[in-house]
Amino acid sequence: MTDAVTISERAARRIGQILSKEDAGAMLRISVEGGGCSGFQYKFDIERAKADDDLVIERDQAVVLVDPASVPFLAGSEVDFVDDLMGASFRVNNPNATASCGCGTSFSV
Image (cartoon, rainbow, N blue to C red; front, side, top):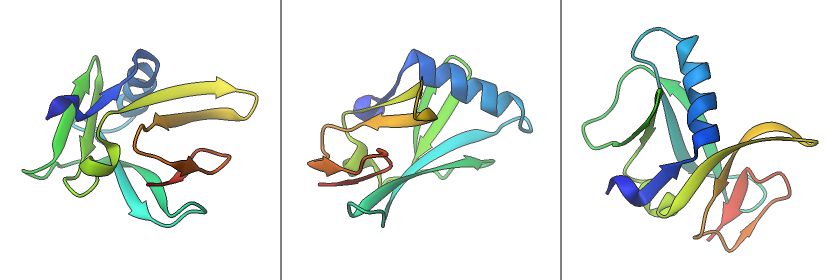
């Protein structure tokens, strides 16, 4: 099930930069929780430990964890990193989202 979520090259590079400033073994956790202006929102956290049932995605220096409850919401998604006039941020290109807010941090299914 590792193909449930993919990480773009730009996102992997940025995640690697972030994790290199953390203690050894740090990983990025991406999760979906209720809230935001569209019903669900993406959450990004630095983790030191993974759960046995986490989906683990590795690309280059990036290690990303997704909890089992979030996997169905993120299935088929690509995590990208963009740096544009709106600022620098991770963006989730989620084929399951039927609508999203203007800033791209919340969505509905």
